[in-house]
Image 1 (cartoon, rainbow, N blue to C red):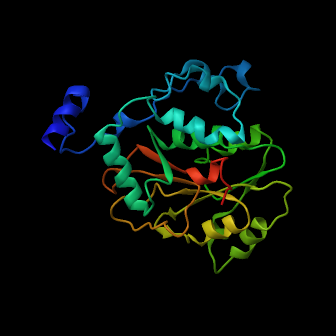
Image 2: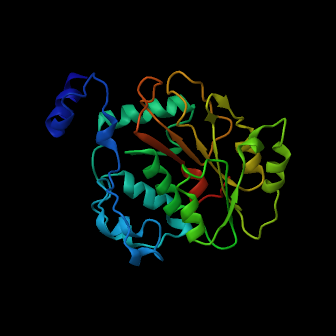
Amino acid sequence: MQYVEQYVLAKYPQYAGFIGEKVDLSTLCINEEISEPSPDDKNKSPRASLREVSTPSFGSNHPDLDRTQLEPSRLLDILTQKSSFPGSFVSIPEIQAQHKVLRHCGLPDDEYLVLFTQNYKDAMMLVGESYPFFRGNFYMSAIGEEMDYVREFASYKESKVIPAPETWLNLRIKGSQLSQYFRRKCKHCPKGLFSYPADVNGTRYSMHWVSEAHRNSWHVLLDATALVVGKDRLNLSLHRPDFVLCSPDNTPANPSAITCLLVRKKSFDTTTASS
């Protein structure tokens, strides 16, 4: 262990204060600066103005990444490139932070790609720009419109957007309506992406929706950022959402801006069948 510490300190002096200490997750984040769009940008992608002026810190060696029209088969590759320093040694603080989040979710570390972003909006926009929305598939969301930054990307890519009232998540009241939309006919498989919150103002919603959506050929984004990592129980081992959002250092007294995005590799690996 002493040798490992010496090696890390020699190769990564910026992590000198991290050995045995609390990890500053802001050092692991994808850092993208946001600029205000000009009137000429009205017909551009929701991320277009951002792409022209920003250089993601974790993707700086891939300048073509920000100018590429994403394709379904490339989703996992592009998110992997955004989250990694090509050829670099993975730092101990990064490993510690990844393991903390995966343990909280009850998920195996070999099945999910882990990305850290500066805030909730950046994490949602990563999903929005990388998910293969197109004319003919769906985006159904029970996340409030003011917080749903994926919706604009789905509309721009001409996917059918379906707002789902929060009441539909209640299994005893109007859950059947949500089930009917899951069973909706579609020429494409998967049918699209379903997003919903795990908790809203203390009201927990069932993980049943993850399994039902998967049975009906939908991908699922679970927003668990309202839960406290290490305190609020969140066991996703039986459900395996395709995307999970959570806040690693979130506490009631000190809400965290850092947001972690988990992406299930199997769902977007073109060498295996999606499940």
